[in-house]
Image 1: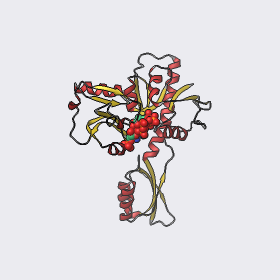
Image 2: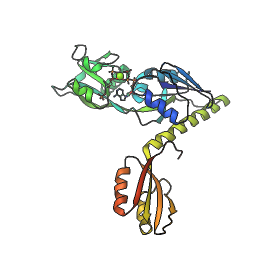
Image 3: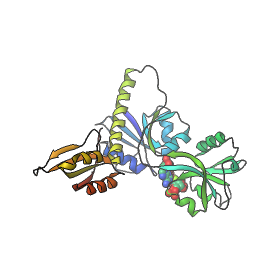
Length: 290
Ligand SMILES: Nc1ncnc2c1ncn2[C@@H]1O[C@H](COP(=O)(O)OP(=O)(O)OP(=O)(O)O)[C@@H](O)[C@H]1O
Ligand SMILES: O=P(O)(O)OC[C@H]1O[C@H](OP(=O)(O)OP(=O)(O)O)[C@H](O)[C@@H]1O
Ligand SMILES: [Mg+2]
C-alpha cells in the first residue's frame, strides 16, 4: 500500500485533490477527513498541513507528498522533487516599505519577519548578512507597520498584498515555487523486494499525475485543410510525433488533428485561418500518456 500526503487546507489543497481525482484516485468528500483509503489503486491518502508534509515524507513514514517547493525547502527535511505539478506558482521575495531603496545587504542588523524562517536564514547566510529572523504564522505584511520588523520575506502571488501595505519587493527571488511531488531523498544502493514494489507503485502514481499535468498544458486542435496546403499545415501543427490526417468525402480537403501547447493555441489558430484552414476546433484533454 502506497502512502501519500496531500495538503488538507490552503492554496494548494483544492488543486492537488482535483489533480489526483483526474488521475483516477479516490479523494475525500468531507473537508474534515484526514485519510482516504483507495483500495482499488492500493493507495492511502493522508490530508496534512502542507507545511508538515515534507517532514512526514523525509522521515520515511509516508512515501510521496504534494507540497510547495518553498515549503519543502523551508522544512529542511531530506526530500527531493519527483514531479512539478504546474499549479500553486509563486515567488518568495524580500519586501520593505516603498519609501526608500533596499538591497539584501542593507538587511544587516535588521529584523526580517517571515513564516518561512529556515528558507530566509539560509538565504541571508548565502549573502553573509546577519539579521534577526522573526517567525510569524501569517499576515506578515502588517508586521512592519506594527513595529516588530524592518522588512519581511513572504510569498508573492499577484503582488496585491504587498502593494496594499505600501511595500516593495527587492533583491533576487529567494525561490520560485510551484506545487511539487516530493519523495524521501537519497535512497541509494540495493533495494529489497518490498522497496522495488514500492518504487513501481510510486512510478505509477507519478506517471498518472504527469499525464494530467501534460493534458493541462496542451489542447487538441482539429481542422479541415485544403489538400494543397497540407505541407504548410503540418509545419504549423507538427503534433508530438506527427499529426493525424484523414481524408474527407470531398477529396480536395483533409481533416487534421494534432496536440498543440495550450498557450500557443490562439496564435496557431490565427495562422491556420490565414492559411485557409476551416472548422478549426480546440478541445481540452483530460489526461494522457505521451
Ligand atoms: N497567493 C498565494 N498565497 C499563499 N501561498 C501561495 C500563493 N500562491 C501560491 N502559494 C503557495 O501555496 C503554498 C502555501 O500554502 P499554505 O497552505 O501553507 O498557505 P496558505 O495557502 O497561505 O494558507 P494559510 O495561510 O491559510 O495556512 C506555498 O507553496 C506557496 O508558494
Ligand atoms: O501576492 P498576492 O496575490 O497578494 O498573494 C500573496 C499573499 O497571500 C498569502 O497570504 P494569505 O492570504 O495566505 O494569508 P496569510 O498571510 O495569513 O497566510 C501570502 O502569505 C501573501 O500574504
Ligand atoms: Mg498564507
